[in-house]
Amino acid sequence: MVGLQIAGRCLHDRLVAASWPGRTAGVAALVVAVLLLGMARSQAAEGATLDSSKNAKSLATLAARIDAHIGDPQFADASWGIDVVSLDSGKTLYAHDADKLFVPASTGKLYTAALALDTFGPDYRIPTSLFATEKAGRDGELRGDLILVGYGDPTLGFDKRASWADVLATAVRKSGIKSVRGALIGDATWFAAPLYGSGWEAADLQSWFGAPVSALSVDENVVRVEVRPAPQFGAKARILFDPPGSAPTLDNQLRTLRAPAPTDISLYRAPGEHVLHAFGTIASNAGPQFYRLAVHDPALIAVEQLRAALARQGVSVQGKSRSIYWPESNDRLASGSLERVADVWSPPLSEIVSRGLKVSQNLYLQNLLLMVGAKTAAEERLAGKESPAFRSTEARGIQALRNYLRRIDVPLDGVLMEDGPGLSRRDLTSAAALTALLAHLGDNPAARAFRLGLPEAGVDGSLTGRMRNSAAQGRIHAKTGSMAFTYALAGYALTAANERLAFAIMLNNYRRPRDAGRPTAELDAIAIMLAELSERSAP
Image 1 (cartoon, rainbow, N blue to C red):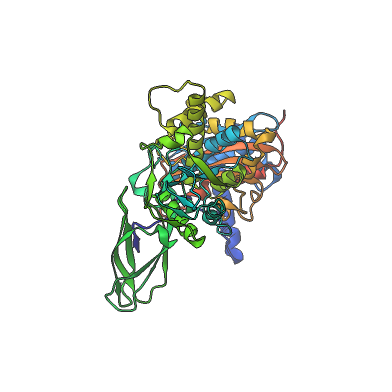
Image 2 (cartoon, rainbow, N blue to C red; image 1 turned 90 degrees about the vertical axis):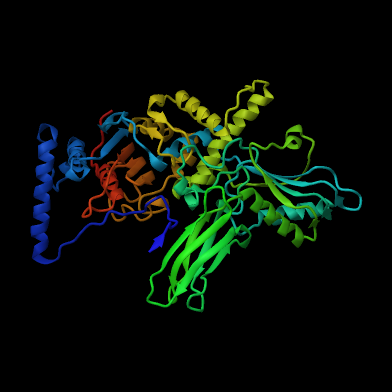
């Protein structure tokens, strides 16, 4: 058992078909077929029936099949919101409480991804810039500070093949700087907002999916932790961090006990604190245990990595390393008086969006929302239209989202988002609003990066293990969403008749019965029905 264990929010799943060997299979299959037939007949309009023929997968029986599925007694206390529209005919093929508001979980990322691509374009690259407070002397000494400024790149350090820090350190040496008398400063003030999104829960903030949001991020603001038993019984367990420079202050009370003692590991870091408390027990014969934890101060970790890279280039830094975040400000940066030394650039925005959607990376989508908000604030300052009243970068991003949705005719009363990734339980949206967004992007050539960024059923991302070997494999491209008691799936389906559909399926307040399958399989079953459709809707 692992207490306070770090685990992913996005639950991967697949629909597993049960098989019954021998003659029992025929009897079991017949019983199941009869039960399904009775359910469908009790709820279907105009006597639509379920059978194994082509007619069972027709448009006429789609509503009956979905109604039978969501009408199962296990969903008596839950709520479904579903909307299915054809991108080819424009018709609504199915709707159930499509205009009601639901918690979208990570399907809320669809709004932020679309906004970011519309604001910056798919080819935009995010800079991370190194400045000096003055020019170096003829002797190569910089008497001032070096300032590393982040503008929101969430991928810095993710690609281990090329060290961003070594690139900048090489540029420093080539610029003629041999030593730095001043400090090394990590500047994350481009985002005038707290380190966490609105509505994020305290219990999430030490986990990788609740990592702090920073204009200067590195290694996805996560440190990898490995726990191993000590060689001696009763001794403290061995705890290793990767990268080592991201290690928090460790309070290790985790003991190694003689097997077959239980392995019961708890890791805890209070929000805003730098001390990681490790307690519990690990069996002497236990294998390594791995975790991913959020770091406390990503901007400081970034400049410490830069300091190490400068040392490798023979450039010494006498001053200390420190970081600055909002509400502190960097007046020298705002004045434009700094000397630019070098820049490193992110991958294209299309790649950032793709990773953010496929593996449901909360940091990426919150950073993208704040980037939009920061751009809005900068444009207002340049135009002399900045309001004296303070508005956070996040609030500006949300306002930009509402302006964007209004422009593309997505109903605003169906979208009440307060963060970028959908991690807040106060986020609300309707299935109809999601399909309106998807329909707009489905026929928009400029939104190709958005569509390609969606997980593909049975193939990649958070849908890798779901809907495999079904009609939906390769024909469903959709964003997943999952929290406790909350599940969602929204995206595109290509039917067996090659009709393009946009759909949104949300299940809220669902507590899985002990004998039921995984909740995500309940949503997948509906997506498979869409992929199986054997006829097209009429224009």
